[in-house]
Image (cartoon, rainbow, N blue to C red; front, side, top):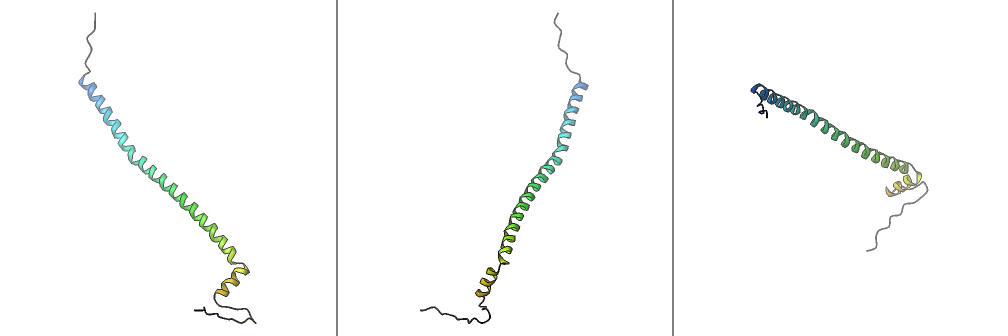
Length: 97
């Protein structure tokens, strides 16, 4: 003898819909924190890249300081300004034209 399939009762259907709504509410509640986490993670990566770029710039500037502290650099820059050593004479040569 074949059994007749049972139809779910109204209370059973209501409980299923309530469960679906509850799961949807939980999913929606997690959207904002997850989005905030992803945004923060992106900011951290950008800041790390900024720090790396600043460290490279600092190394470059420190190398320039090392060069600028040499006697040769100081003398070259002084001569560009028209300074001479004691006992030297400054001659200015105008272009031939």
